[in-house]
Length: 194
Image (cartoon, rainbow, N blue to C red; front, side, top):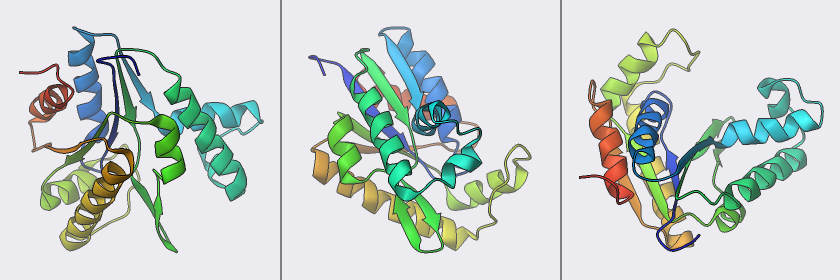
């Protein structure tokens, strides 16, 4: 990336308000610098559609080798983006029957070469309540303790990503009713806030 350009990977567990906070942060950042917000899964799906895949559910059923190819293609597209600030909205991990599957394995981090890693977090009880009250999504029911474990595990994984890439990592809290404050926190981390 040229000089002062940023490529920030932003993660957060379901119900933390990541997508809302990232969208607001991108709006704030775009007032001063050319900013692109990209959703990693959307890029993967766009590539899968070229193969005739019709839905995200169908994409998830592809062989692992195809999913990895789609991941790498999406990572290369992100690496080629030249805007002042590129924000990547993605998942740090996917909880599966076999355990946690990393959303950012080393091969993808190497391709994307992020300048910043940011995790959006919130109080575990607030996350439980948000999940319960979100009628637009179908989410697994989780206890406060399970949410706390996912948040702790996320911090450990993001710290590992930081060690692997040399990119600093930051934690931004999204308290209830304070998404704009969280977005401003992201802007500040990326050098464009107060």
